[in-house]
Image (cartoon, rainbow, N blue to C red; front, top):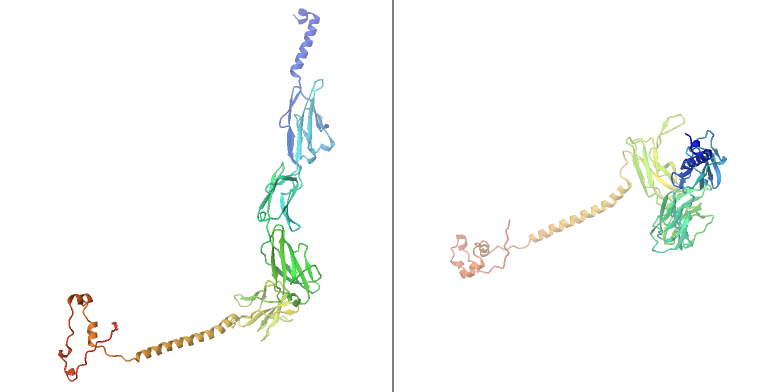
Length: 521
């Protein structure tokens, strides 16, 4: 039996309509939902996906819009390719489930993106995402310190570029001040800031960075002097005064009591750390002393420079094991003006070849120039020496046409003898040795004389009583004498006399003077 037989034609119609609407309500509600955060961030040049999922209807139409402008349209599972905006074809891709992917996302794609799904004859469902594309600032954050009117300190921090700009701050100086991309703070110079390290904090969504800087006054320094010859043939002396300081120190120059300003003779570099002096005559450099003063808001340092003429401070000679090659080395004082050197030799000349290719050798009893070296040279090699012969060498410093005193002569060869310093030592040591010998001889003579004089004094015979007293038994101590009583001295006239003593009268007894007892060896 059918429904139409039981309920009639009209009832069957209404039942079919009810079943149809019940089926549609249970299975055809289209819903789209995010499969990840709706706020997405990406670094420029990287890939990112706005992931979604849907349910309720098969193969819906998907439309992605960028700030209400459609950029991608596609029917899921359709054989037709998606329709992508012309400007975004290299960037946007749509996945099989409708998710939107960005390939090497550019910086300009920061926006709101809305997906809308629809099904023919049914409702629609949508959801909105926010994408932020960041660009890292270039390089690293940097800190610097500058002087303002030689009184104040300007702390500067920067980290340029980036989207959005990095936020910068100096918490140790002022926690309430900040800047985007760069920050500058000015403070009066004070002892509290001298040697204090200050850190700049740089905050960016992609990365955190920081840099530090320490303020300090000029430190001790030594001026550096260089000498050359300029294209016009003038002597060019360059003086550098560089003191480590933060902020960098400005340098002022003076000659004697006068300040130096830029002239044709004196030129100061743009950063003030270098002074150039030009002149043909070396004597004009030696008239007055130069001075440089390095100064910043936290202090100053001053140094004087006394330029000197061409001079050699030290020289040495080295030979190879065969004795055929000699190497001369030398040094010059730091403030000496030298543009070149003449290397001179005395004795047999070094071997040389004439036009026919034969080797020749001459001899000389005076020094003559064999090499010329530039002002920056500090060594010279002499080849083809005869190890059986003796040679002398010296160096002449020169400032263009002005020659300075020669260096100490150095000798090479079997008869090289003593060096100049050894000869000077002997010259000073021989007189001192002779004087020491004279003093020593006088002392010995005095000792002998005093000994002979003492031996000539009259020596009297020692009385027998004294001898007996010296050889008395040990038991006759003062204590025993006191306890045993006193004895009268013996009568010497009653003592038995020897035959040799009987013919002469005995001398009267005279008490002997106090005598020191000593053992005579």
